[in-house]
Image (tube, rainbow, N blue to C red; front, side, top):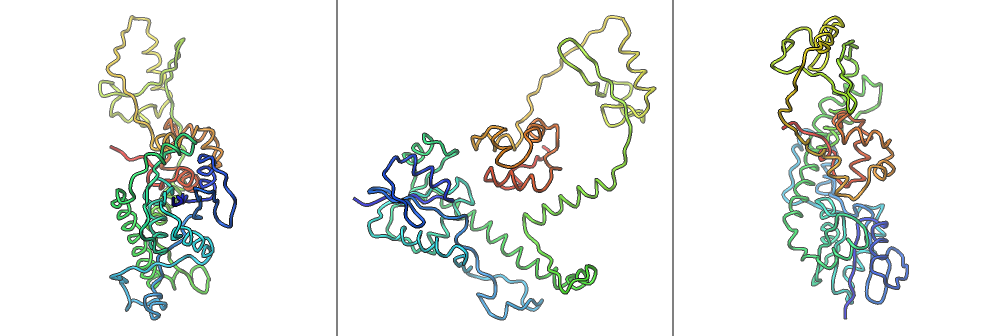
Amino acid sequence: MGKSVFIAEKPSVAQEFAKALHADFKRRDGFLESEQYIVTWCVGHLVTMSYPDKYDERLKRWSFDTLPFLPKEFKYEVIPAVEKQFQIVKGLLTREDVKTIYVCTDSGREGEYIYRLVERMAGVKDKEEKRVWIDSQTEEEILKGIETAKDLSEYDNLCEAAYLRAKEDYLMGINFSRVLTLKYGRNISNYLKMDRAVVSVGRVMTCVLGMVVRREREIRAFVKTPFFKVIGKTANFDAEWRVCEQSKYYNTPYLYKDNGFVDKEKAQELVTFLSDPLPAQAVIEKIERKKETNLKIHRLKAGLSQKELAELAGIPIRTIQQYEQRQKNINKAQVQYLIALSKVLCCEISDLVEYLD
């Protein structure tokens, strides 16, 4: 009877799979092995796309004459820093006594891409490959994922999407970085008094930089504007006045946004009106439940509490709560917060930001 290999995306996840399998594992160099199972791991990406000079040595020199760079076939190579672990994984995946490979990389496009590159470079053939798709790393979830694992081929579309995204990132980064560096690099280096300057462009990186720049401009242009809110207090709750189309203040210059007044006198005028002892009647027109924030959706999907997410991401729990309650706009969050959250939740920054309907 052949052995089964379980390959995870990182050592910590591999350890959870080993615990869930309840086998007498022996620790080896880069993997764990029992009589029936082998558990190994990647350390993130083991394989990457080759730089242009691997296609043609002349492409090492940046020039407008060699742009755009659009290869017909893309080349891949093992990342030198993790060469040892790749060779270990390759040896396990191609062992003669291995019958089944359980792909346990993160359940998503990037996790799929990580394994498919390893499979490609290792030359895996004639093995039964199954995909374990789980949302958390509890023992119950892991065992259920193994039991219900589907044939890897059912995730070929996800694999193609991952390859396409990687090629898009690669072509955008290579071509635009070279074009903008050739065009503006000398001016930038002169301005910064540097020997040389490279303008790096990336699908995600450039968008994040744009968010940083936009936020910085908002901060620099910000002018403090005093305004006055009208708050009503009852025995059970506090109520904040907001203008509506039926109000006499609607679309008037007296307002600051939709929940305050520019002048204290107008705010006091409203307070006086609302304090009139004449009987008044309020009508509840509708009750709406706000859609959950993307942050909360991904946190729940990861099986994390707010406290756990805060500790893993190094972000105050109050900040997490404010983002989920929309008391703070996550689109204006500090970049390091967004990066930390996306890493912990195994998603992209764009998955966390909020979009207007």
